Image 1 (cartoon, rainbow, N blue to C red):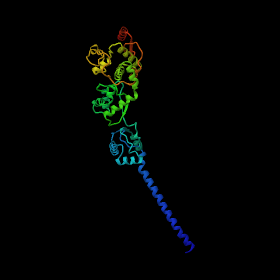
Image 2 (cartoon, helix red, strand yellow):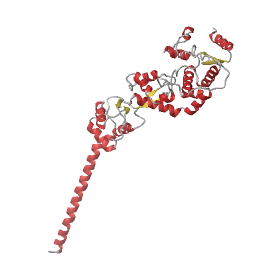
Image 3 (cartoon, rainbow, N blue to C red):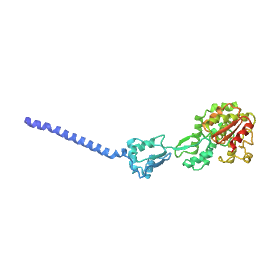
Image 4 (cartoon, rainbow, N blue to C red):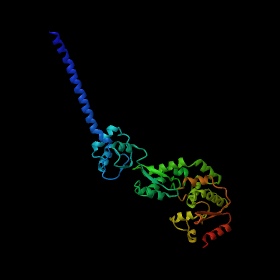
Length: 348
């Protein structure tokens, strides 16, 4: 064989290797382009038929069920897209129950991040300082967390803290801490009550409240009861400690509390202006007739009213009347001064 033949023969393996390399590179680029083209939609804006879509993911829903929900609500074109999206993002095990607002500018990738967020998907409910358990229950029914207002009271009656904090009472009125909560859809009434009770434990200085109560020969439950009356009587935060101190004075002097708020509670009407006839109502919560505190709280007091009972103002005042022109109460040490204040307020 000539030298030229040997050179030609030796080039064949190299040419074959080159062709194989080209095929491999070409195939890889084809696969990469195809893969990119097949998944680029996850970073493109969603196509929605509305400015926003609200999606409610219930507790316990599987990934497949969530996918069907998103397709049904017009967020994604098919469950196959959702499955592919979860595979790419690795989000299958991190989806959370909640109520989510999906907007057209969001991408599918951002959608998964939304469904994984611990703060974006709850049902936000404002439970106001001074609301009764029934008022709180009504708010929870309105947002769809409960179906009947009786569910909250029933759950509160079964909570183990009832016998610890309010032995002998039939409910946890006073201990359902008012706050703005982010509840998960599908939460049961006992779970909601437990969340509110734990908030009371976390936000209220219970040892200080118990000690303040003991210094006035009161129980913890009686201190919470007094805080609930302060809550409903006070018109401004800066007068809560004054009202608390005033009520302590009346209790120590053996005077009836004569709180209009307790009569409103007895009547089941917070909006009514109390009349002389109303103060004669025969009811265990009418502090114009009973001695001392009523059997339990008249509402769920907020932190400022509870703090006022822990640290009441040292005052000699025994009477107060609301002055609408001032937007707060007038306080008096004697009944004669109290009567003068009433005449001044009612003067033409």
